[in-house]
Length: 115
Image (cartoon, rainbow, N blue to C red; front, side, top):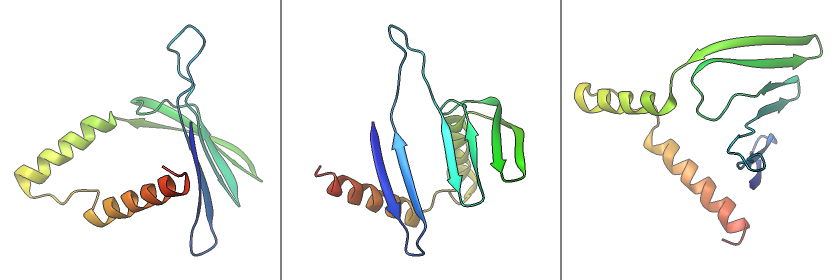
């Protein structure tokens, strides 16, 4: 299990927890998604990289709303977009600048953890 706390320049904070929990004597996974904000939260039991119809719940002071979206396999979408970049000159969704910022953030987290 890995956890981190990120403080942004504008005062917003984010925490992240990443890990895998398996049931005893099984390979059953317990994936969860929680996003908390000052106006409510989003929760889902969707599995990591799940495809198909995925539901999530939005909780606010006004109550709860459930929504369902249809998604394809993330890895297939990445490979298809990569192919379009090579064959058709499409610009990648993930920019070099984003990749560098992500790597720098991970380096800072690892440094704080003494890794």
